[in-house]
Image 1: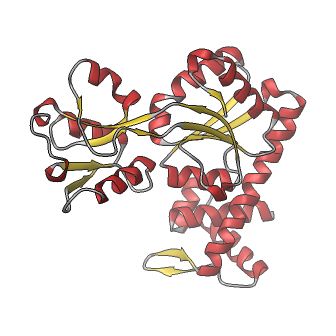
Image 2: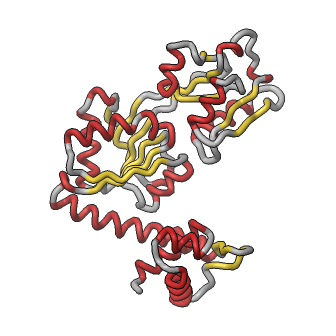
Length: 291
């Protein structure tokens, strides 16, 4: 078995926490995964995994090694895509990552426009919270990210920006006499950039407002519509609900918040990724401008 296959087995095991889960994800036998990870540990010379109940978890050495393994695999995939894209950008691969809100409200129009103009470009899309998306770029598991402002340590290049305003919304019934300090606040999932922004806003309110954690962007909006509480959202994402009066904007100190969208790539982006960046900057209907 090649070192690459061993690395993929190790990362699958780290992600799924069990040999069975890793085998299912890779569509191989459990014995194949066990043998691959055992051989990798012998090659490295230290224990990468340890038992955790019925499953396994990474040792501190394994956690450190996994970061390198992800980058190695990401770079291998990127190298192949870069070579094919350099030969023919119109038939290359672009691996795109986006935070949840962008995935729901920006990507459909962007991808549809790109597909219409460059139909032979292969697109891979991952939508996840910002805490997941940025490490994917750092590990070269994606070529381009659509999200808020990138972390300083991601080592990437901002290529385009788009206006985005965050506002607090709730059902019309809560508007009269609204008090942010006594409201129930609906929070996004862990790792969400909007959740981090909202948490910072709540720290400036008196007392400790009630909080209810929901599992996704859509869940928080549905809960707000049902009158379960109020939440911070991208105004663009609820424009129709605001227009028809299903939701209303609510006054909160420090809100609205300007949090522009960013399109971010590696400094040495592939030819097919450059094709995507040029397209979104050329298409005025998409609303992006050069960074």
